[in-house]
Image (cartoon, rainbow, N blue to C red; front, top):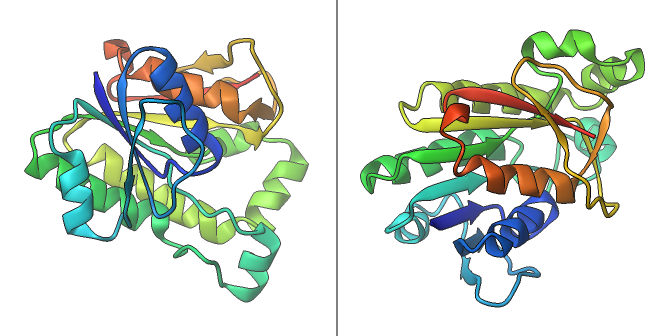
Length: 214
């Protein structure tokens, strides 16, 4: 399949690009700056808020994976309310992606969210609950808005909700669950990237929220 990854230059976006390419998909990586990618991946440099650049990247795709987020130190973001990336990048950026998909008749949408939203907040440890409330409040509010936009999109969507991400190698498969259950509070970006790639072909995940842990 032809798959566009939006937010592909770092973190889980890089892992998703790699996993998709390893499965034989024709991958287009869209980001403001280029990053590492397997041979054969097509890079498109552009901003998600540039409707023209994004629209051109969406043309001809079979599916879109969205891994937008803020990479800045969360304490700095919370205290200064300032980041290199707009604080509403997940919600506003995903809305732009959905607009481009509708305009180009692309229906399959995979979006990375965060475990701990909605009813899953009750499943977090006390330390994580405090971190969400005291430090990550701006990012969580944006991600809640993002999820609402995705659910109302009318597209064939899947929300991927990983627990806390880390960069260690993890060749084993992640634990995935459609009923909010997790087995830990940490998971590798490498593992989550593979979940994004697997989601492309999972018709049973359409309209589902997938919790990911390890």
